[in-house]
Image 1 (cartoon, rainbow, N blue to C red):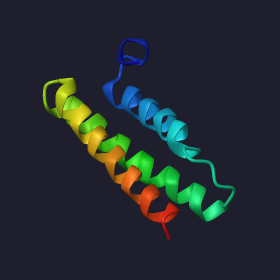
Image 2: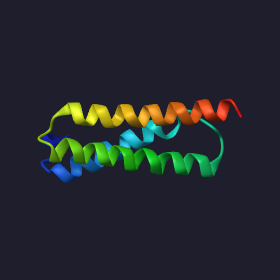
Image 3: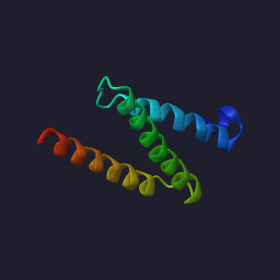
Length: 84
């Protein structure tokens, strides 16, 4: 994306928007407030990943760790909600 846009910040924004949209419907629950909050949370997480990637020398390991922690948090939340 950076090569195509010739701007780091624009490439980051595009990645954050589309990665956030991808997480928008995982899991899909037809509730407006839930979907909006899910998109906001995903966008903040992805934005953090993009910053880590850019600021820490474009290494993937820190970004992978942060994403894994985010996924674990989501899994724990889903497990908690399913067992209520």
